[in-house]
Structures are given as structure tokens and as C-alpha cells.
Amino acid sequence: MKLYIANQNYSTWSLRAWLLFAQYELDVEVVKLKLFTEDFYQTLESVTPTAKVPALVDGDVTVWESLAILEYVNEAYLDGRAWPDSLQERARARALAAEMHGGFSSLRNELPMNCRAQRKVELSEGALKDIARIDAIWSQQMARYAGGWLFGDWSIADAMFAPVALRFKTYGLPLSDQASAYQQKVLNSPAIQRWLAEAGEETDIVVEDEAGEPE
Image 1 (tube, rainbow, N blue to C red):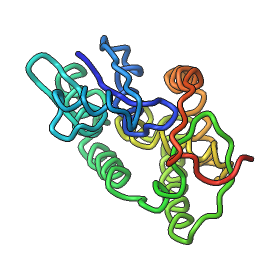
Image 2 (image 1 turned 135 degrees about the vertical axis):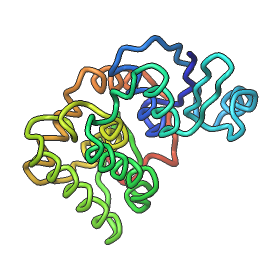
Image 3 (image 1 turned 30 degrees about the vertical axis):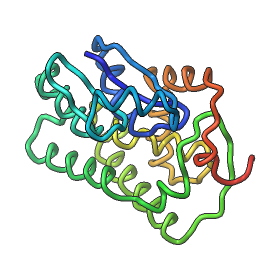
């Protein structure tokens, strides 16, 4: 398998797809491209119809979009282990993953992922509402699975929310005790520590994602 990603410092969607491979130690060749460069678009034009990352090539199968990649790998290589066992919890996990996939536009726009930085920003009412909703999700799940991942064992839902934990760290956003405990579990996980180490080796600056002012 070959997984195309972009700058690890900035690319949230790349992180979501990459995490599944790291978490389950699956064999994959990672091809990292620099955002907004000629090579980025030229390389991806022959790989995916969207010319965006992430993109997965597995033999004669090509999958684009993070959530689709996560679902494909889970079915093809993990026997469904990356979702909770019970029907009810799978439904809830999928609902939360889809909510993250399609929502929280104010948070995305105002708090771009920037792993290497410590920044401060003035947040809109919409962004504050998004943050409160995520805090509530994390807190509710921690009340059900104290000390665990969102559904006890690591799942695709955790992959979808992982970039938010990094965003909250970059911008120093306060969280409730239970939400903060979940954030720390994400940040301290070996896979995220590896991602951060690799992001820290990058030197490229994407001006569009340098929001706010240095802390």
C-alpha cells in the first residue's frame, strides 16, 4: 500500500488517515508532498481525481478522502476492529466521526493545525460553540470510558478527533477536566508522538495556516 500525505505540521486530513496505519502497525509506504507546490499537484493528478491528500493506493484500488480510507483499511486489513464491537456503539462512533468530518467549520477556519507553534487567537462565537461541542463530546465519552479512548479501545472516532487535540494544544485552549484528560491521552500516545517528531523536522511555512500571533 502507498499513502500520499502532505506536510505533517499542517495537514489534518493526512494525520487522520496516517494514524490508522501507525496505530495498528500496518505496512505502508508513506509519500509526503509539500502543500501548494507544483510537485504536489503533478504527483497527485495521476493518483486521485481530486488531486488532494490523503490518497491511498492498494494494488488496483485507489481511495481518497480520510474517512473513506479509514473505512477501507478497517474492512480490508483489520476485520472491522477499528470500530466498537456493539451495534449501538458503532452507530454512535460513526455519528461522531461523521460530525467531525462534516462540521465545525468555524474551528477549522480559525484554528488551523500548526503542530510546531504556540499561538494565540481571538475566537468568534462560532468557534467557541464548536469548541464547547467538542469538549462535551470528549467529556461524555470519558464519563462512559474513564481513562480510555472515546469508545474504550482506540477507534476511527479517535483518528477523526486527533487533529483537534493538537489544535487545542497549539492555541492553549482551556478544556474541562474530562476533556483535558482525553486530550492528554491523545497527545501522549506513541503514534501522535511520532507524528509530532516528524512534523518537527519540517521547515516549510504555509502562510495560510499561520493563524493568530506567536504566544
